[in-house]
Length: 124
Image 1 (tube, rainbow, N blue to C red):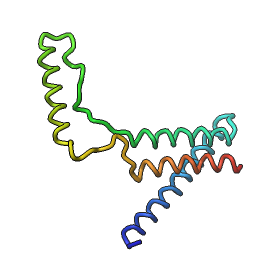
Image 2 (cartoon, rainbow, N blue to C red; image 1 turned 135 degrees about the vertical axis):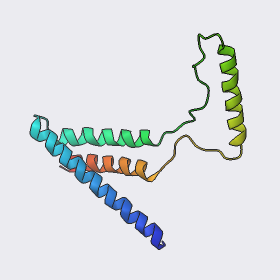
Image 3 (tube, rainbow, N blue to C red; image 1 turned 180 degrees about the vertical axis):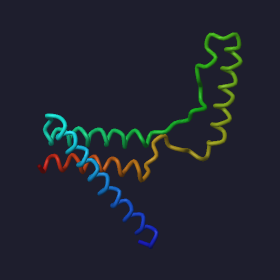
Image 4 (cartoon, rainbow, N blue to C red; image 1 turned 135 degrees about the horizontal axis):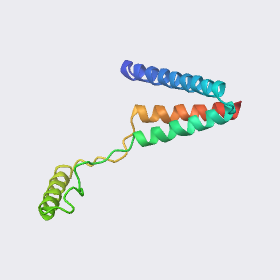
């Protein structure tokens, strides 16, 4: 591994530890102000963070077909314009296929942070 990859890995591990510590502190605050069990709070926090991590990786094409012309006098014109735009975008990205789920450092960090929170819950 080169220097750049090592820096990125250290940054990634630091973010994981920081996220886990923040989740634990939030869990302690919730337990302090409510009557919930700490294990239950950690489990729910972990699930929420995992779901946020998964949803943060989902992306899409916002210039595709839309319903903005429905009910208007020029609905056929707007629909035709939308279809032409979609056709041009497909031609541009014909050779360059972009997936709708992009795996980035933030997505993986959130998922692993939530998993660490759930693992701590099972250890306790």
